Amino acid sequence: MVTVNAENSDGSVAGDFSAEPIRVGLLGAGIVGSQTARLIVEENSDLSARIGAPLELAAVACLHPEDVDAPWIAKNLLSADAEEICKREDIDIIVELIGGLEPAHTFVKTALECGKSVVTANKALLAKFGPELYDCAQKNGVDLSFEASVAGAIPILRPLRESLVGDKITQIFGIVNGTTNYILDEMTVRGLDFDSALRAAQEKGYAEADPTGDVEGFDAANKAAILATLAFQMPISIDDVSVEGISAITAEDIAAASAENRVIKLLAAVACDSSGCVSASVYPALVSKEHPLASVHGSFNAVFVKAQAADDLM
Image 1 (cartoon, rainbow, N blue to C red):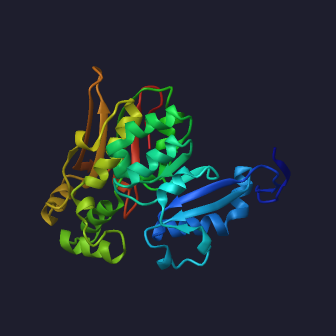
Image 2 (cartoon, rainbow, N blue to C red):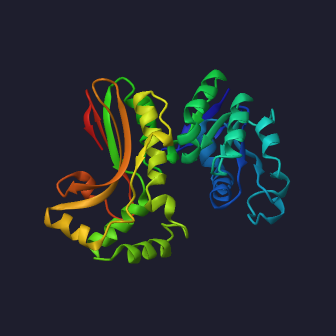
Image 3 (cartoon, rainbow, N blue to C red):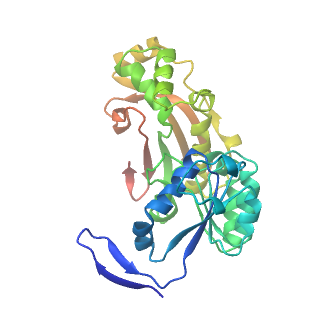
């Protein structure tokens, strides 16, 4: 039972909670993991009020606990045994922030099988093992949440799973990789060549030291697989996605597109035809400057959805 006090003037709720705490186990204490822990600790009052129950950071797993330098993470919460944290009966939710396929796949599946809901932003994991993990979560009566795995904080996955579940989606396409959008935008707006635009992206922290996953389209392909699986209720994996990146795009290509009143954008596109055949691809596309996606600049993302009843949504 939760006893809640009156609403504050800013719309937030100050609560006197008598509910059992929701205990969170984090897998990973890198940049993302440590900052997630900071939010849970430092924003605890607000988060608990929104949830309606006390939220508690119960454990943090990482390879080298002794090297973690995050004062908001109590030392006694750190452990090198991620599997043990996934199995602990006193933990309710596992947040997977390790990345990659293994051991993340094993840990997430273990947590689901142990009756724990899991939150992850691991697009590579979901693109490869998504259908298996969705099924595992359903069989064990828990949730697998992954909104941040596609297009950052843009709320696109929940609408596909909930808001549009009564509609028939025919096509989704959009910009789902901020690094490539930044590079192409710099080439278009500032007239930079590809290498110069890539260096600018790396200097701003948008691109990794090894940008292959972004510029060759693999990151976007992972997201395309997730979108197709959700939109069309079919097990689409990264292996089913046709991929072409932007590393071959030249300043001359950008100029030619501009002469035709178009811009070049790296798009992830998934579609289902009238026969039920699903296609998924990532490719640099010529987008009319009149289309809303053409005005998406910098490292921003945007997704366009075509549905039978709702029509066009962005």
